[in-house]
Image (tube, rainbow, N blue to C red; front, side, top):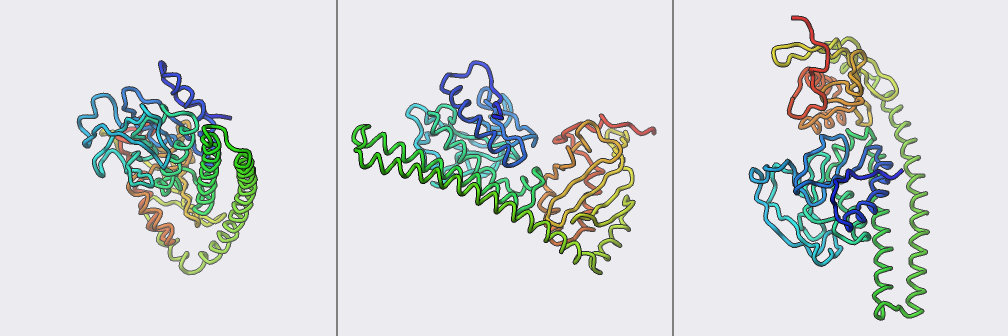
Length: 378
């Protein structure tokens, strides 16, 4: 089912048409990733980050709220003739140029080295007027920007989607391939319309029609091949996990278990279904001179790199912890460190870091305030 963008009232008719043409694309990417992919129309050219609840496109917007533009990096008006190789509509080429690397996000550059967006966590800020373009350009450039941002945010996607590296790469490759094929199809149509003042000779028309038919066959065939490849990859991952589980049950894993069992706050540890499971003692967090009981957690460290932290006793709605929703943690600047430890089978070190993570909160980026949990008596 198409995902409706977050629409503000009073948008122009061209923008409304662009929103309509983007809706099925957002639904396609949402289904492929298992993660909501949305678009938010900005108010006064600034838009607040969405705190990792979805992968969000902010067209022609910068992070923050009204009044923040003066405290960020240097921003100056610019003109983009093209974005990602596609010509923008005359009169709709206004853009922003943002100086260098900055705290507002990671620069996203197209094939010409032009900074066309900023990636801030799961928020993608487009520095040009995507919604002002004609629908075909909106679709093609929108897809290209999504592909570019997902590639740049690959390590974060592993945590948010819970997919293994091989599975995630297959799905991203399938989306990129669909973008490429759609671009080729649009290019063929444009050539057909422009030939001979809009009337293509019969031979060229027939050739272009044949090219489009071949592209459609290619899309269907490639889709079947990619689905088959993903199925085979999943089978291989399951087999590899079983083999690695068997290998990990050797003396090396035994030493890791000894280290895990000796960590303060660990009640029990075991291996099951391709993962190391760690049961914690009750987690209590001190905040504002008060103590809050969050309960017992199960830490799941999968051999394929996935990670889940699940609250077994004191979950609040969908939140296991102020920084964890549905078992998926927002690890911030320790994310790459933890992923590296899991890749190296350093389960004890990863467990020690995650135990400390569970005992701390940061009000600046929590998903649910710790005050929603039960306060411990003094």
